[in-house]
Amino acid sequence: MEGYQRGRTTYRLAEQFGIHRVTVSQHLRRSGVSMRRQGLSDDALHEAARLYEGGSSLVRVADQFDVDPKTIWSGLSRMGLRIRDSHGRAR
Image 1: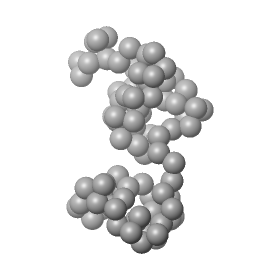
Image 2: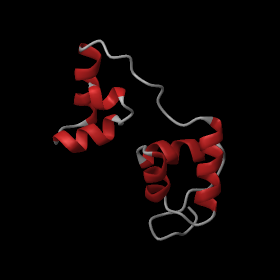
Image 3: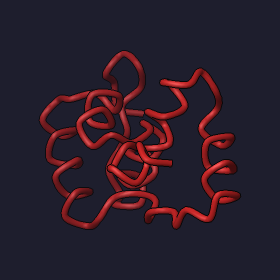
Image 4: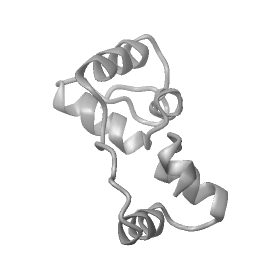
């Protein structure tokens, strides 16, 4: 609980304890911890798009914002950006 309340993400806590992030979330909720908003703010999403369009991978952008790459992929897709495949080619 303390790590989450100090700002660590469920992803980082899951990694630290060797469990799935959903398990971390379940423990936090059962302990009465208020969960933070999921996803990225509009400003962060625009910055993520700038980085991605500049050539950074989904994984690198996600690491920078301490979120899962799927969060970045989802946000960029909603913005209408074309997502590159794993070889850097437009899909």
